[in-house]
Amino acid sequence: MKIFHLADLHFGKSIYGRSMIEDQAFWVERFIDLCEEKKPDVVIVAGDVYDRSSPGAEAVKLLDRFITAVTDLGIKILIIAGNHDSGEKLSFAADLLKREGVVIAGKIKKEMVNVEIDGVRFYLMPYIFPEEVKIILNDEEIRGYDNAARRLIEEQHIDKSKINILIAHQNVTANGIEVERGGSESMVGGVGEIDYSAFSDFDYVALGHIHSSYPVGRDEVRYAGTPLCYHLEETRQSERGPLFIEIKDKVSGPVISKEVIKPLHNMRYLKGNCDEIYELLKDDQGRNEYIGIVIKDKRIDPETAAYLRDILASRDSILMDLTSEYHEYSASGQSANMADVKEKKKEDLFSDLIRRKSNDIPPSNEEYELMKFVSEMMDNRDILDGITEADVDKIIDEAKRIGG
Image 1 (tube, rainbow, N blue to C red):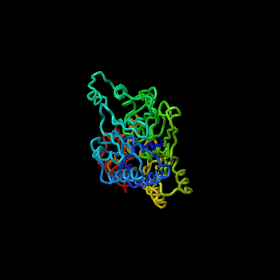
Image 2: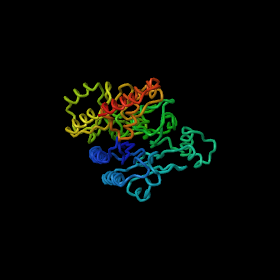
Image 3: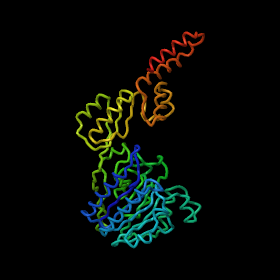
Image 4: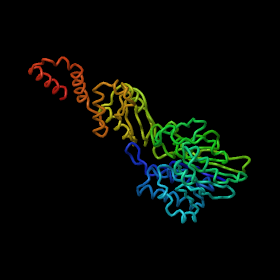
């Protein structure tokens, strides 16, 4: 049997204020081409089909295109709901779709949705919550995600003489250690952990939820990762594509490889001092890309931002994110913690506020200098005791001069 393992499609997602639907539609067409070439028997989608529980029309149309094209090739599709999906909406018309070879599990049940295809038994486990499993199994002793998953699997009476595959969308760890995240997962570290040993009855475990592609604990427990980079941090694993699983028999086990699909727009980070960034862009041959830039040696002013956007636009590329690490200053206006805030200069805190209130547009150099002047006045406010009216007039004139 040949299987494609996908996960975390997030159809309808926007990143850095830009819709990814065009990129996702391009990816779907390339995946259909790959299906024609590799001729898999089954395509698995391990959760987070949509980016939100109420997807937009374009996202729904894209899933329709995906399902129709794949089933037209005679390939079965198995889909589970992830934490971003609405199980009820995703499984709409599930009985009708099942006749066409599309099996969807939107909500967890005491007896998991399962299907046998060519001697391989597939179990579909949509995203679970312990309280939900506790109710379904009528077991008040269930505590935590790991315990809930183990109890649910115990109820399935799995025939271990067969080849068994589980499809799940959870935070799976190996002895408490998480795999490296992608960058855009909406989850907190340590939440919902299930140890990989809970899945020991399965010959392969097709996972979704983590946006990078890694095995967990053993090679046969796998995250597929997202089809595209959905965050600039996800460029750490830039080559993305479905996992291709070949299974001949239970003894030899699965053979796992990755089929890379090149995206419509390559995504990457550029980091360095401002002059280094300028030199990199001067000699850069990249076109039609999504670029993030981190400048280390200066604040970002409107002139610098405009220059960088213009030079990238001339190459049909888009500046997705522009930040500065100068004096812990962040162009996004977000501080890591209160210690960072206390260390910042007042003028940089003013700049943060302006960016938050002006759609991330930084202050001009003149505005920054005015902020700096006001900051100095605040730091030396003790000298204002006994100040004369003439002195105040001089201060106002100086502020006007600096501010233009």
